[in-house]
Length: 276
Image (cartoon, rainbow, N blue to C red; front, top):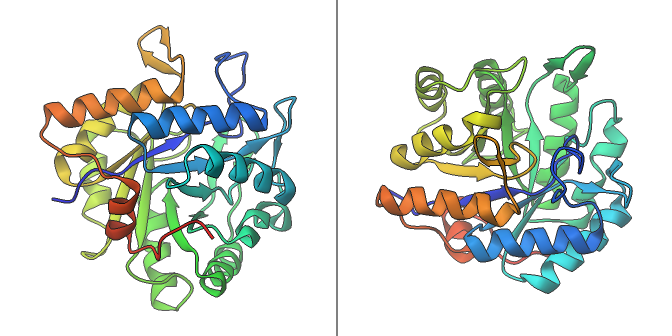
C-alpha cells in the first residue's frame, strides 16, 4: 500500500469568515494556511483564491501572487489550482490558472446540482477543452467526480485522448446533488475506476473524517480543509487547516498508514516534480 497523500483544500469558493473566522482571503492568509497544512503533513495544497474581501476569483494575477507566497513559505509542496472556480463563472475565467503551468490542476467531469438554483456546469466540450489544455501544458489533472457517471465520462474521454493515463480521481462525497458519503457508495466508486488509477476522497461536512478513514484503510488518499468542512469535531470550529490535517495524520497513525512527503507524493502520482 502506498503512503498516504494528504491534500488540504484551504479556502474554496463558498465558505466565508462568517462560517469560520479562520477561512483565508488575503495572499498572506492563504500563505499561512498553506504553511499550517504543510507543516501538519499535507503534500498537496488544493487552491482557490479570493480577493481581499473574500470574493472568489480565477484571475491569473491573483493566483500568481498566492502561488508565489505559498512557494516562498513551503517550496516543496505540490500546488493544485482549481479550474472549477465558482458557480456561474465562464470557461475562460475558470481555466486561467493553468497558464501558470502548475504540476496538477482539477478537471471536473460532469454537471451537478448544488442546491436551489445553483448548477455547476461542466459540458462534455468543457471537459475536452480543459483536458486538451492540460495535456498541452504538461499538467496532470485530478479528475473531480461527484457521482459514478462522472467516472464513466472520464474513462470514455481517456480512451478518446482528452485525459491521459494513469488517471487520478477525487471522489467528492456528500455534496448536495451528488453521491452520498456512505461505505456502500465509496466501495461503488472505488470499484469503478481503472486498476492503474489512484484516488483521493473528499468527504463534505460531517462526512469528512468517516470518509477519510475509508480512504486510509483502502489504500486511497485523503482531502481535508475548509473548502469541504470547517469543524474539527461536532460543534467545534477548526482553528486552521493544519488542525484538520493533523487529525487525519492521527487517524492514519492509528491505522498503520504512513504519510507521504511531497517528494513521495510526486512519485506515487507520476509527477515530473517541482512547481514550474
